[in-house]
Length: 143
Image (cartoon, rainbow, N blue to C red; front, side, top):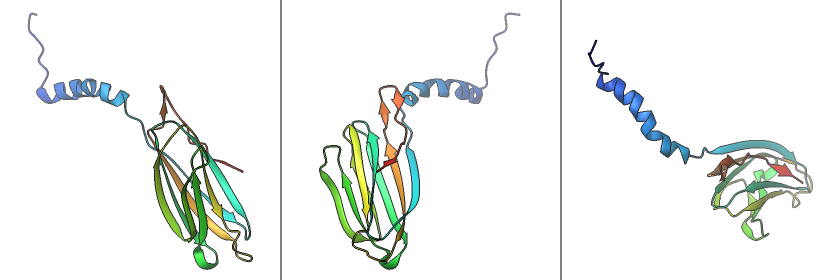
C-alpha cells in the first residue's frame, strides 16, 4: 500500500512539458489572413480598408490574374493618409508594414485603361493582431 507510483520518464515529459509551455503560449498571437479575388472594370478604382492595432504587421500580396497588359496601379496608405507604397502598372507585388493604430487603405486603380477590365487577387496577412487580450478580426471593408 505504501508503494509510490512512478511515471515513466517519457510520460512525465508529456504531462510536464505542456504545463511548462503554457506561459509562452499565452503571448502567442496567430497569423490571420484573408484573400479576395475581384473584377475591376476599365476606368475604375477600388479601395479597401483594414483596421489594425499598434505594433502589428500587415502584409499585402496582390496579382493581376486577367486583363490586357496584366497591370494595375497600387496604392497603400497609413491611417494618417501618408503614402507608404505607390506602384504604377505592376502585375504583382508584396508589401509589409509595421502598423500604427487605425485603418490602412489600399487601392487598385485601373483608370488608365479605357477598355480592359482586370481580375485581381490579393491576400492580406496580419501578424501580432492582439489588442489587449483580444485578437483583432480580419475585416476588410471597401468603398
